[in-house]
Length: 256
Length: 371
Image (cartoon, rainbow over all chains, first blue to last red; front, side, top):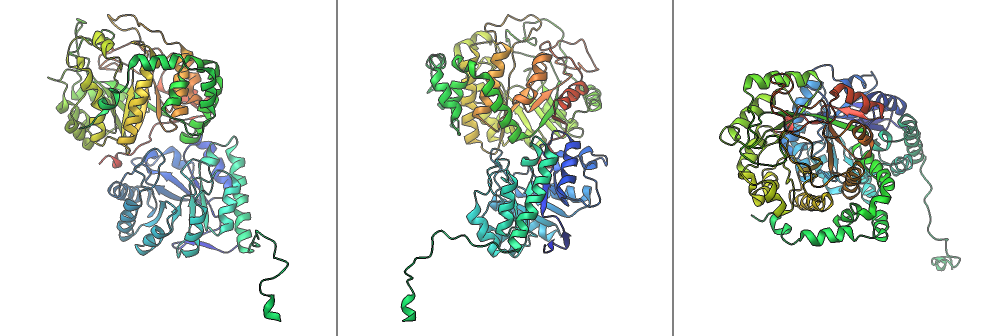
């Protein structure tokens, strides 16, 4: 498979994981290791930035795993920028998953505040991966202000509904100059495989693994699905045809 | 300002009560299979006709909660700052006519109490008081919050109704959530139980969540005191209130609590008894109707109920609670608001949560967001 880079970091796994919702930290660690993921996101609100012995963090402390702090809980750019700076200092990483969802019901991202915060954080030297709606124009605007990647949603967070935004994801993937990571709504390995077949650079999965009957086994299933989907994309999928070719061709006159 | 009062006035207690009690089995079956459930479905789920469907409701509630919140339970502890109160509430230990010595914690005493709660592992604290505005007022609250926020990521308050400006001050000082319980939505019954003091003003209390929403508080907690009136009808109005608030103050989170009347010094017996199966039905009804509502269970409930409710819809639990100011260390014998039912320690409860396959969460907020 082709190499995959965000900023200057090379990833051999195209599956990113979230760390929320697990029944225990032990279970989370087993799932992360089984997934082969090299980038896991952690909500700042869940970790203790003041001590160096946070329990959650101790379970993802493996040399191959990079930490992606997220700003879940921020309702506007100001809160997100402030939290990001604290995180950078405490966790010694300038990577950030920017999440601004003022609506606590469906946790849908605020495009205006996200664009504002991305611009500000990019100037401060952050590597930003913003969580956004599958809006192709917003993706281009984010590129303009220096985003490192875009993370459009497949469907609302935690809904497990799959790629409801498929048509827009296709446009985003077609037009993007930065990596496209499909985030949110991926409820089954088949959804992840589909996103990869479409040409997404990576996917981020949390709920579907965390609340599965066997999170570790589900993590393996996602790992395999992501690899299969990417390989299919690189191998160039045969196009599906809706109709058989007509037996009386419309262009046959050219031969007469 | 347009408030919930204008919505509330379109409803009549008896009409709603009749609707609940006349619900049919067929209506329950119809509501259960809907993908999007409305307040009308909630009414059906709390009806006596829905009782035979409790197992099915519990299964769905379990799955929905797991999907939305994951396998976690948020831990919190109440800290009573004061039991002084100018109200007469005939069900409450703090009632003015209860002639017992009163106490309000000083800064030094607060420090001793929070040290104990931190030692127990807590990072989310609920500050509770009676209503004694001459002494326990916004100035007192701001001072206490400023002191306490150094030690806790998330501060919740349950105090007398305040003005919008005062809620804004609490918000900018670092308060994350405000709880306010209407006690009962039955206007006449409310009057009987609250004969004297500021709290006797039904409308002022009814409009309080609007003021909290206006002030931009992150989470608003509602509830009714179960036992004062018919729990079904009261809970419908509570849900109606949440429905209204959720659409209007859409940036805030909402939680619901279920204070069931408990024995306390000098109080009356509850008029309406709510069985464990009723409370479970109510919890499931809330979850089926409202997937993202936070649901809190306190130590008012008994051990068996608390242990078994963990996977069925709740999202937060208190543990090892004391309901008197200074109850953890400073003044263990001071007047309490009510007797708790589950006296087990926070660590014991955390262990039980883990054994159920759930993760007790101590920190789920960062104060950097409350700026």
